[in-house]
Every structure is written in C-alpha cells, then in structure tokens.
Amino acid sequence: TRFTLLFDPGRLKSGLKPRREVGPPLKTRDDFVLLVSAEWLDSRGRALVAGFRKNFTVTPPDHESPSSTLWELTPPPAESRQPLEVRLGEPLDEALLHHMLWILNESGERVSGNVEIADGERLWRYQPREPWEPGRYLLQVNPRLEDRAGNSIAKPFEVDLSRGEASAPTDEPVGLPFVVDPP
Image 1: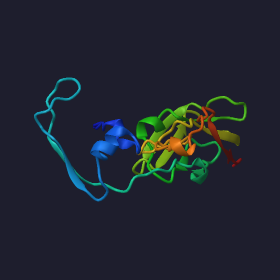
Image 2 (image 1 turned 30 degrees about the horizontal axis):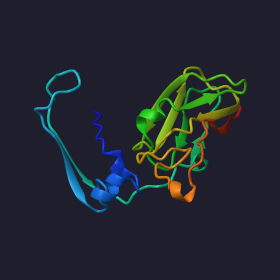
Image 3 (image 1 turned 60 degrees about the horizontal axis):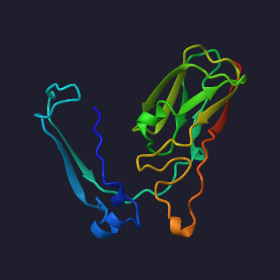
C-alpha cells in the first residue's frame, strides 16, 4: 500500500548543478501516470493481487514550512476516551505523524494511546488508553515533522544559502497547550 518514488535531490533544489544542467524532474501543470505492473512482486516476494494506475498533474512547488500555529485542536470531553482532534491545515507526512506528535499531562508524563490519521493526512486523532482527566495538556510536536514537499516545521526544504536564509534548525519540540474541561 506504500510506494516511494525518489528523485535525484540535485534536481530538486534550486541552484544545484544537476538542476541547472538538466532541469527539475517535474514541471508545473505536466501530467503523468504512475503504472505498477501486476507482474511486480511485493516486499516479501509475493505476486501483487492486481496492477495499479494513478494519474497525476504537477502542482506549483510548495516552499512554505507547515505552521503549527494554524492547527485547530478540538479537546475531548473529560472522563471519556474520545480522541483529541487536530486539524493540520495541510497534508503532512503520514509516517511521521505516527511518531512525531505526543501528548503530555500536567505532570509532564506522556499520555499513552493510539494515533489515527484521516482526511488525506490533514487530521490527526489521538485516543487515550485511559479516559481523559480534567486538566491542562500539551501537544508536543517534533520540529522535524514534514509536509509532503519535505518542508519541516523547523525549516523549509528549499533554502537559499546565498541570501543567508539558513539558520540552525531547533530540535526543541513545539508545544500546543489544550484543556480538557471538567464535565
């Protein structure tokens, strides 16, 4: 269910020799088709159930870092196991969403539970193992969390070093507070 297509990094970033000489691997508004043959084998060497075809249209590049300040948190009711819902504003990398966000209670302890990703990687849900206690919580976000274009919360993928845009990204988690109100 997952297919990773890698492009030459030298053709992705502006100013690098391969991009100057050959150009970017994709051009805005171009159409292409990804075909996976039914004859391919999966990662365990088994035959695929069926082939796959997906059409794409290339959109303009995304050079903006995701902004956690734009996220919408919907706290759950106390004494329930309903999930905390976080609307992310844009699709983020699903694999990273499963381990780069976590919740701390008022004592600074991690709240154990399960993550669900929905709405095309635009919604993060966290269901606790135990019912929510009333109180203050903190959603912690690893700043290396990326969108689909490789822009992290800490820095965009495309950085113009000639303009002094590069700064050392922080590894400090971003904290988003929320409150679970008493019933």
